[in-house]
Image 1 (spheres, helix red, strand yellow):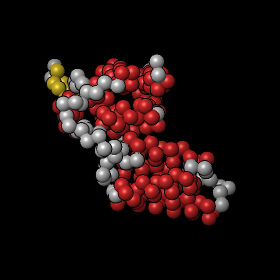
Image 2 (cartoon, rainbow, N blue to C red):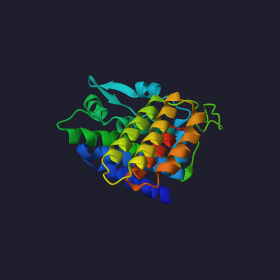
Image 3 (cartoon, rainbow, N blue to C red):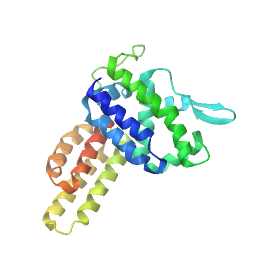
Image 4 (cartoon, one colour):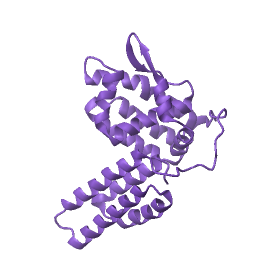
Length: 241
């Protein structure tokens, strides 16, 4: 078994065995692994780059016994792409988790709904991506794919929202540190704001070099180093870098 596979099994199982109130943490942990593990990221990128999330999600909604539910596609790469996008939506706005569960997995309690969600989506996702990691089977052969299209050409709304939240977190952390030099705090704030402003231009050619300046200027300062890593994970997940 590959080391990446073992890590993925661990993160998926941690999410699957968690409770509703704690699931946001485990979703974030799983998405960070996807973004930072080279093998897993390569598989995820290959699944997502030729994929229309909105269209696939709509086609997965079916009515059973007068209630909406999600029916996963049979193709393993589409399973991975669909579930990753759903988890990414949850990660960028945790307030969407409860309405999603109420819509598709209503049950006697939030934990019971979450268990249904795990059984229907997380377990199949785990098996699909593990099988792809183990054999690297190409399943999008029926669709022409531009193999040079490793990154997006503009910034998706979700990426902008994620970076906005991360920059706000940086400002809050810096404001709450009493012993930081005021000029250093001001410099860090300015760098973070400059990075977010560059994101709002949606010009990937400007964002990539600006992110490097943001990363190497702020990552050595421990109180905000996790936020810098989160920003890198978000840009990778949205195929910006």
